[in-house]
Amino acid sequence: MYSGGMDSTAMLVKLLAQTSEELRVHHIRMQNREERDAAEQEAVEKIIAWCRGRYRPFRYSESGLDFRELQAIPIDYLSIAFAACQVAIDTPGCTQVAVGSLSRDTDIANRSARQRRVFDVLYECYRYRKLGEPEVRWIYPVYDCSKADIAALVPQEILPLTWSCRRPVTVAGGYRACGTCKACLARQTIRP
Image 1: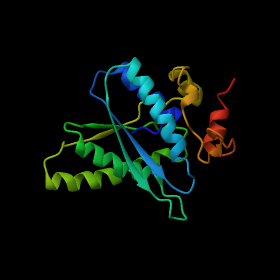
Image 2: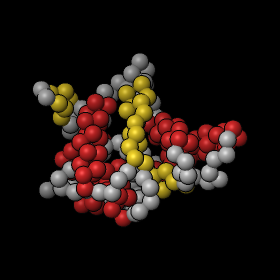
Image 3: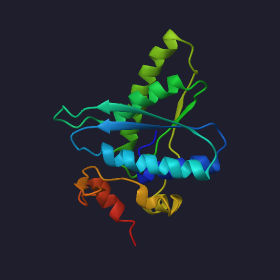
Image 4: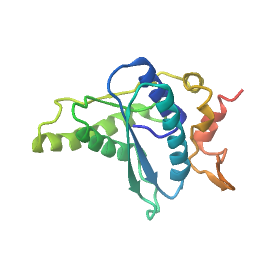
């Protein structure tokens, strides 16, 4: 599952460079009242194009979830579990789902367990309807990395293309990071 952020870009680069398994990269255009989807989409398109030119072939797909009419911001990690299940079903022979979660992420152990439970329940429904893989494991290729480790894994040519901000500010010709959200503050810790 790919967002266009630093963590998922480090995961993508690591999987492309250090594994030989067939890889399907999937991005969810997650629209909500934070309005970060356009900035993320721009980052994703540029990074995917860059990776296609420098690494082994991989399959790329996208889906979208539109929550803009809701006042509350949906729980992203559960939406990711829903989409991951659909992608696993759509990918014959899929036995793993990779996400760019870090151990330092807030409440990651419980969040990851809840995410896998949602996925497992959905995938179990699929197995009842049609023979699916007996087990689909969730893997966390950059789990033990610090933000500095993440920044070192991402090639310097594409590091500036990654998007982390949760509340982008629209400016002429694009977007700039707000500089105050949790993701921006975490990213500021790795700048020289």
